[in-house]
Image 1 (tube, rainbow, N blue to C red):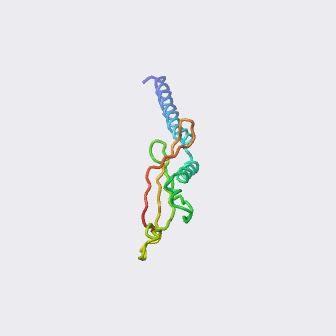
Image 2 (image 1 turned 90 degrees about the horizontal axis):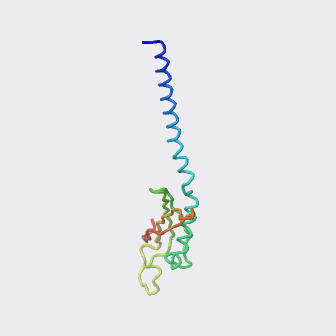
Length: 137
């Protein structure tokens, strides 16, 4: 081998290493850039709570309800945030004025699953996906 060929190989290896390092930095930067544009969980939770409070299924419960509780919010695919909220309410049996029996389960939970994403203007937009009622645990 010629003495000059070793230095060319070293330069070539250094270039490849430098390019790989730059590529790794760029790949590492993209998740950080994506995080900057993701909807914060606190903003998503506020939007989800507002959607539930404005929905007729929440308003029809009446004044005897407990406060609305956020069970959890988590990130779903495609930039969506999902939130699960609930409120404890008297069971339909307990609310029946004509009942002549004792109700076995006095409290129920009404639950909402809300999906939140950014709208075209960048603001959080919430949509109720599912509403369910079941005996409280």
